[in-house]
Image (cartoon, rainbow, N blue to C red; front, side, top):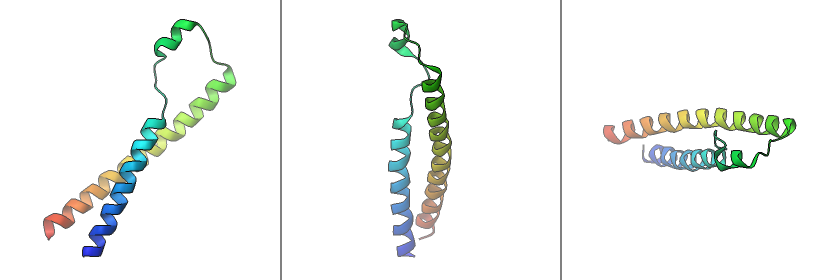
Length: 81
């Protein structure tokens, strides 16, 4: 039982770090001050970023779900002991 706790805690720590990194890699949804310059992105640049942002958003959902489940299982193990 002790080994299972350690494995789940390590997995939870890894998912926490990966989730934080993926969230920080995502671009913001608003233009901010860059909209004032009048530069418009090219069509290819926007589509490439949208595809990357879509992949990162999807990956964020899956890793967040894994983090929630790991937290639930770890809490069950610690309350049972």
